Length: 302
Image (cartoon, rainbow, N blue to C red; front, side, top):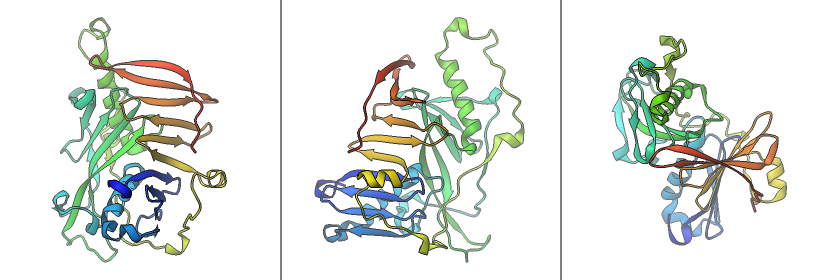
């Protein structure tokens, strides 16, 4: 989007609802299931409604556990027919896995058959995945139905890894480390000892799209207050926020962690209980080695 309709901020909450703000002061909110929305101050957006919905869903699907993929909002050129909704894939064994070197120094690992790929960033601190996924369906569709699928891209932190990506991430990190090793650090046979990985563990089930319609729309709650107000930040848990080109990720756990992706391939991560201190992981290309800088940051989301 451009001009007065440009996005100024996007927030994905823990329940996977989305709040998008625009330069005009307009606000788009998506329900957790992705299939309902509200648009406040919509006058200037009616002619761009499909465009703003596609952009909001793309942000949601990038960080949500399961994508929402309605056929009407997926470009025709990005769809292809398929006759099965089987989402199982198998990843290669360590001994036969060949890594690709992607743009900017990314390490890429692909599943057998090519339905999924994992791309580890040069810093080794975050990764993205791209996989084939059937579009959102209605309950009335049968095994005889010709389904449509599309490619989905998701972004993750190595500090919060969904189980489906654990094994391919291990492969990518091993290959990444091998590539950066000094010659004297590499074993004579050029191999490392991998863990005992069975065929079952190498087979994973890809994320599936959410249903086309929600079974519990009465549970949707619309946030009409400013998400940046103190009250809202205390009551609504934020999962991911994008603002002015910078992505902020909150990793909830026993000790919450804040990650900042400035957009230059580096990652800034808070240090556990010392949550006012951040480590800046910066890849030093072309060598690919990572520089760690401990700095003090005061962050204000206002």
